[in-house]
Length: 495
Image (cartoon, rainbow, N blue to C red; front, side, top):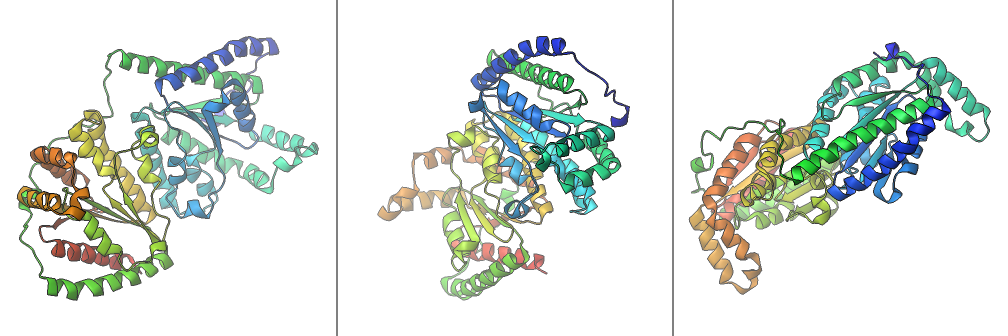
């Protein structure tokens, strides 16, 4: 593919100036339109060393309002980044609505440098294609515009540019041993680049190959592509604002759960206080031992608590972490998203809280709010919550592929038990803060929430992140069952 490209394309100075005079004006105008409409834009530059990526980023920056974009040069991952899934450092850098993020190299490094240099196993980089496609599709489905450029030059031109840089004392530092090593691996990189371009070229995030022997031609092609892509996105957003609907091909046809999972839960399980005390301390001590072992083996652990209001999530979490070293875990309480979180993809705030390898994160509520509260209360569209089942499964699978242990609990109680607990909270002065009008409103929608929970359990219980349903009418029983489940899961993972 790449070897057959016509790299002789050129523009004269006059042709270049005539084109750029208009393109720069259009680019600035479209940036302002994207800001007005809240369109987040990702521009990704990949390609050969010395192909002109840095020069192009500078050229774009000069034509855009510097207050509206960020540039991220992607280097080999540091220790903090290596302790998390490879997409983590890109999720944490995606732009909010109305801003532009420019990546100098990208997440495709997993199927390029990591592949060529054999820094990860073949099975790891091969699987990364699916993760990359999932990442780009999720962002695109959420309204992100992704513009991907690949800058191509032949081996002879690359060598000449390296030589020219080395001959100039001011630019000599820019050519490294690594650059020359990559030059010798040119044929290997050709194969990797062609695989990348073929396997990650999609309608949602297509590649534009930029013939980069002539810098003027390359610049005009990049600006024309940017202007065309943003113009189309702006037009699409304007149509949505005026009520013109377009088919959403990314929304799967999800059939309802065939059975009620919750109806089959035996809520009679209980423990007396004496038996509870006998079991609690040994399990907590074992958790303390496992915390050290998890750290030693650098295994990240994610524990998710979901359940009915007043089902006992807070008390359950306190017993789970009671004897752990606080330096090794973080308990995260998830409320409604704030203004900054609303400006990002809904999974962004959970990716940013993924634990460093060897640490725990315990979520009191989680990303499952998209298919429960947000679904029932109308905080997202039907297309968004239906799509979320697959997006959540993909995220959890990526975490599991990295080696994370994922434990998910649904704490289940009956509507009658919830009522008793609500009334007890209202009648106890030091517990009244736990109950509010929203809890009562949600209770009135019990049947609708139950339907959503059944759907969630059915669609998102996987072999890599299964749900454990805990009968929580007995708080003592629920705490022991949760502790035992975490202990058993961790013990099955440590070597």
